[in-house]
Length: 157
Image 1 (cartoon, rainbow, N blue to C red):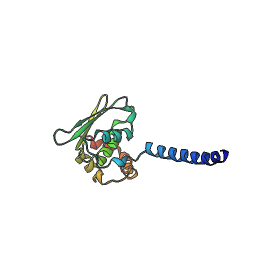
Image 2 (image 1 turned 90 degrees about the vertical axis):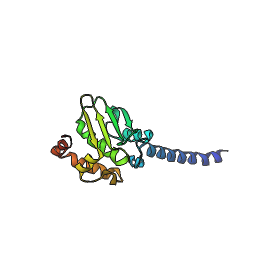
Image 3 (image 1 turned 30 degrees about the vertical axis):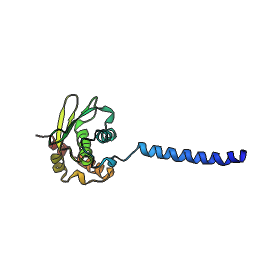
Image 4 (image 1 turned 180 degrees about the horizontal axis):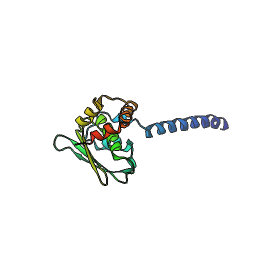
C-alpha cells in the first residue's frame, strides 16, 4: 500500500503543477484570438474590451448592427487619465480585431469622441487590420501617442 502511495503522490503533484500552468495561461489569453470577430458577436466584443486598458472603468457598450455602417458606443466612468489616449488605444484594437465595425463612439462623463475606421487608418497611414499580434499594434499606438500635436489633429473636426 505504501509503495503505491509513493508512486501516486509524485504523479498527483506533477498533474497539479501542469494544470495550474494551463490555468494561468488561459486567464492571460492573447487578445488576437478575437481577430476577425464580428460586431454581432457580443461575447467576443465584450472579451476584447475586458482586455483593453481602463477596462475597470468600462460601464457599458451599445452595438448598432441593424443597418450599415455598423458601429458601437463604449461608455466609461471615473476616468482620471487623458481620454484621447484611451480612445486611440482602444479604437485601434477594436478596429484591428472586429471585422465589420466602421465607427466607434467613446463616452466619458463630460466628453464624447467618435472615430471611424477610415479616420484612424488615415491617421496612422496604414490599415490597422493588417496587424497580427499585440506587440506590433501596441508599438504602433505608443509611437503615435508620443506626438501630442498629431493626437490633437485626430480630434479636430
